[in-house]
Image (tube, rainbow, N blue to C red; front, side, top):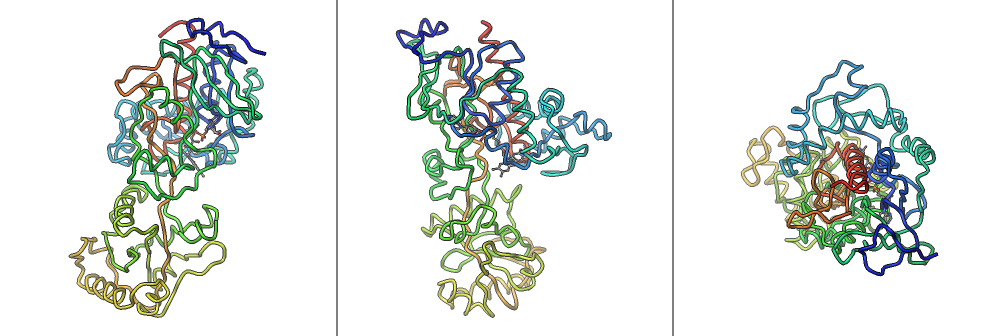
Length: 472
Ligand SMILES: Cc1cc2nc3c(=O)[nH]c(=O)nc-3n(C[C@H](O)[C@H](O)[C@H](O)COP(=O)(O)OP(=O)(O)OC[C@H]3O[C@@H](n4cnc5c(N)ncnc54)[C@H](O)[C@@H]3O)c2cc1C
């Protein structure tokens, strides 16, 4: 059936297959929170479009850890972290690259959001919090991890009569002649639908499964590998920018460092390619494909994120898709390194033999290790300034693994304001368009992601409801 969209009278002669007051694109935490909040504020005809056949996006496969303070859980435990302490920690971890006002909102809303998940959605949380991402005891854990969100949200959607159109991929935001957003084009069962709406929330998640987009947004990340959930392809970013939205902070993404051979040639899963024990071992050294050190291996940053810069620089400089991590027997044993898929790490009795296995000129690796061992023995790394306390000569059997950076969570995205309105680069809002979650820019950093997706989803839902009622 083709309907005229009464909400879109000034949208010209456009006809729609379906009408809603509010269309939400994406049924992850940001989209779900937006839907429930808008419904609770009186919006009647809400429609969620979800391109996958299941609910929950990345959140339902996540670890279900949410940062927050002064929640009913922390209050019961007598824990009283403050906004200032957590805001300072978030900024320090993100190295001051977040928008201060938006990060402040993320922190401020974190406690109310966890209480809302408990009271409104009936999400079960463990009755304890723990440290993580810093010293405050702020990490709340959903019972059963991200899966613990599933049943409660299904129930709330059913109770509220909020439909989800599964396997329906939004492809385009429909604009009126006045440049307002008046609907969404989507593809379902091979057919293109035009859905009219008074407002649209884009909540399509990040682009960790779209390394080409990461490269388009910042060529520094060319050749980055991808392991994200297959739905995280940046659709919302592409759609909204085509409708005039500004995009910001796209260098801000979290990187994991994976076993290159498993993640590529062996087509391993992200878990099988985990080489963290070696990558983060106290005695590790990193080498380029020629067998040369290129950095202070201990300039790690929060959760190793500062490593991305020197790694990509060296990979681009040497035109190599991978780098090497090397440890000695003592370190290898101490970190109990086990390679995925029952593979063995390259290992050899000494540098010459190891170099042959690595495809490196033996003399080069022998010289690299000799220079490093002299520096370690002297407690002074003149080449790269690695701190003396972290220098330890490599001896005995040697182990090596090829590694490469892979995309984790993407923190750059659509520009938005404190009402979650999507902004153009001149900071004017695009009327009728809201966004929340990983599709949007720089309101969170590791540890805060999920709580910020729920918080900003609620803000987007509330703002859209106000707009639909005829407010700003
Ligand atoms: C393994 C793993 C564990 C994690 N654990 C944690 C954790 O413990 N704590 C934490 O804070 N963060 C964690 N994260 C990050 C967190 O889960 C995500 O950042 C968060 O779920 C993003 O929420 P979102 O709503 O923005 O997007 P998503 O959860 O990705 O949801 C977006 C939804 O939009 C849909 N969609 C996309 N494009 C379209 C389209 N064109 N049309 C229709 N639908 C579309 C997708 O299919 C998806 O369902 C983890 C991430 C991973 C990968």
